[in-house]
Amino acid sequence: MGSCAGSRWRRLSDSEGEEAAPEPRAPQLDHQGAHWKNAVGFWLLGLCNNFSYVVMLSAAHDILSQERAPGNQSHVDPGPTPIPHNSSSRFDCNSVSTAAVLLADILPTLVIKLLAPFGFHLLPYSPRVLFSGVCAAGSFILVAFSHSVAISLCGVVLASISSGLGEVTFLSLTAFYSRAVISWWSSGTGGAGLLGALSYLGLTQAGLSPQHTLLSMLGVPALLLASYFLLLMAPKPQDPGGEGEAETSARQPLIGSEAPELKPGSSPNLSLQERWTVFKGLLWYIIPLVLVYFAEYFINQGLFELLYFRNTSLSHAQQYRWYQMLYQAGVFASRSSLRCCRIRFTWALAFLQCLNLVFLLADVWFSFLPSIYLVFLIILYEGLLGGAAYVNTFHNIALETSDEHREFAMATTCISDTLGISLSGLLALPLHDFLCHLS
Image (cartoon, rainbow, N blue to C red; front, side, top):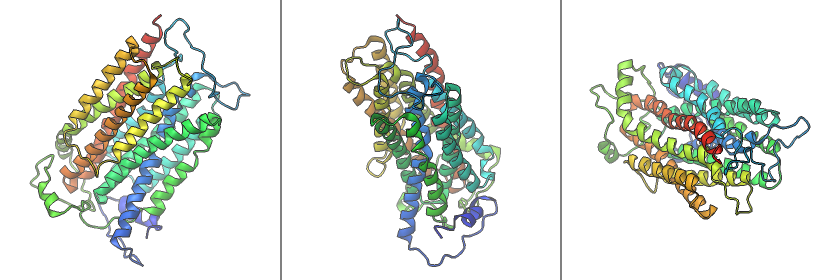
């Protein structure tokens, strides 16, 4: 059954209001085997879905460093230290902030996530996944062969569409499975950050051109499709929570409801009043997640480029890639930590991340940190906070929403990180221009 994905997902998603029970499987896989196939499947889906998004952010400095001449197949030479755009500034700045790449990488995702709660449940899952995979492959190809910043940014937009559509689709899909898959999905997205940033850093450091580095990653969208269509098992027509009686009784619902709970197999069409009630209950988790992502991406795309140390052997471009890789390493570690550490009060994570922003912004202005290695440690810590906020937010929502509301709640909360990232990009652009014109 793991390989018979076409009929399976048509049953699951072509009409979520009229859902048929899964057909008998022969031979039956034992429960443990199905659990691990789904766990690995969601881990790979998280990895592949966020991979292109992360790579585009890691390549942001290269994309903006120069427009490639027609005969230059290397796109950007990763070795030499770039020539400052503004030689009168104490910062080594590109003419455009890397926040421009961030906005191209996140605004399409924002639009998708804003629309998702109001109609995406009517679209079948399989075409959504297929379209997401095609967009991811197109992003690598377009940026790799681009001869201008504008065309490269179009490729980044494709990566954003792929990542945004995929995240809404797969987080909604977790409502039909054991709640444990949320941890696996979150760990996979963290793995995408680490492997995406590390692979781009490693391949370019080894001498491979950014163009050939991007083309070497075309296998990732293929793995996404294989994981969905060939690996995931059909969800069973039962409560996907899989929690014990004690955990069920301890659950604290986000909203009260007199209506009997429906199982995700029935996926009722919620009224606007019900959606608004659920949304108000979600604000306790949405607001801190917005703040966490605003602070960390203001740091990543607004300050990373300005945290340039001249007393090191690393070039500016190499320092930027190391910052991205260490941030993603922290994200991966904390997104994989749910079994070890669970945090209910996510507001504390938002407060700590905002302190990180203030501290690093002060260092950009006053340059009081003596070593790049101190910045490395702070960025690793920043990633740990961001990853912990993400995985604990969705885990808490999965525990505290009823079965009939869970799919909508997951799709709605997706907007949190995207909204925070978008706001940070909009503010990072004028900050970059202001600081880069300081003498």
